[in-house]
Length: 361
Ligand code: SF4
Ligand code: SF4
Ligand code: SF4
Image 1: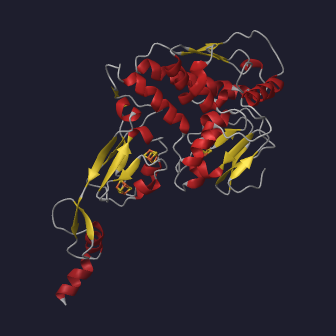
Image 2: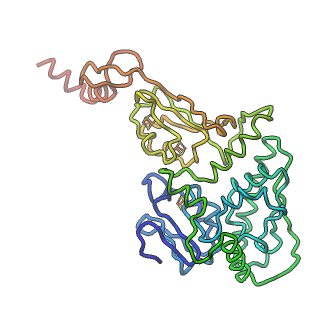
């Protein structure tokens, strides 16, 4: 295990602790990478996520699963691959040709490949059954789960192209050797293999001061070309990719916690701080806002609009008129009735007996 504070590195991977939702937000209990790792190489140590690289078999499953791209592989960038996939002559994505284990790709990457290429994408899974990285079938299950979700979304939005699979084993070769060969090939293609090369993802992470993952930005840009041709862009079904929120006007206290802690700025205050905006395109569904809201005023809304997603349109969820409280003289979000803030009215209720006694004396 590396001693570096924020970035842990193994031979091939790096883990940036400051991008991990779980590490950065006390209220978050994300455990996607822990669940997908077949070797228990990712563990919680004093409630902080830690990579034990002596256990890691470098299957890349954590890379393709983390919602905030906390893991990166040194010589292969799934975002770069997905973005340039349309320029490739072959629709086949194979660990035997140009990628590490296909566990490196998330649903967003697969969708970007299909949406940008104009062809169906073919994932070569014919080697999974005999692969040493696929212990107990965990990795294959994860890859197939991503493919199924990508296809479900494509069908939902009326796109005929799909992510197909090649399931028949045609040849067998030592897996680890090919994994490294694939990485060497990728390094070679990037030029001087001794000089450190900043990948598209690292460059994005370096300039964007928040946890917005590049894979979602690529997907939104890919969707822009398609939404114009779609007859229906609003969907009422719950989605694993896109999320919507609502705030209860009566119970929200306009405390601002949700806007302060949202890691991608999907929730943000109006310029006068009297209301809250929400952008479906920026929400990664981490659930921090719902966990942190004391009066449980913010909840999921089971519908999303692809135009709002693709073009980052923000919707105003609540807006309050601020008035002065008659008791404490502090401004508060007024919702009708006597102008007394929640804190003073709560205080009055709690100590009503005392006030009655004092009146009687
Ligand atoms: S999947 Fe990503 S955000 Fe979630 S616990 Fe793992 S590193 Fe953190
Ligand atoms: S939704 Fe909850 S966390 Fe957000 S401002 Fe309202 S009360 Fe505060
Ligand atoms: S709006 Fe809520 S669920 Fe969405 S990214 Fe922000 S904190 Fe997470």
